[in-house]
Image (spheres, rainbow, N blue to C red):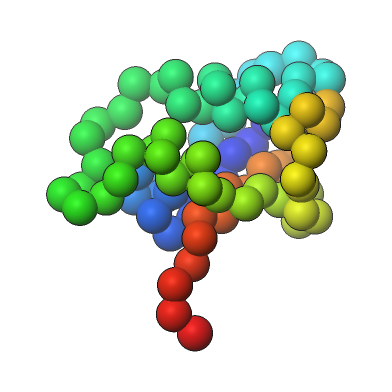
Length: 88
């Protein structure tokens, strides 16, 4: 499963994207737990930790909004992590 990070999530994760080899049927919640368990360098000063950002983020599965974190994912799914955006 490919996880892509945007904006503050990208800064906190230290990468644009990462792949997690998880079995078919893994839930979004479980995927996020795995992603948050990855050891990462400290984020830039002033950037909240990734866990805090993910807790407030929205998610897309293959470019479609996901609200149910228990939804089962496919091994080829792309998950976008979209933190709250400010500005206009």
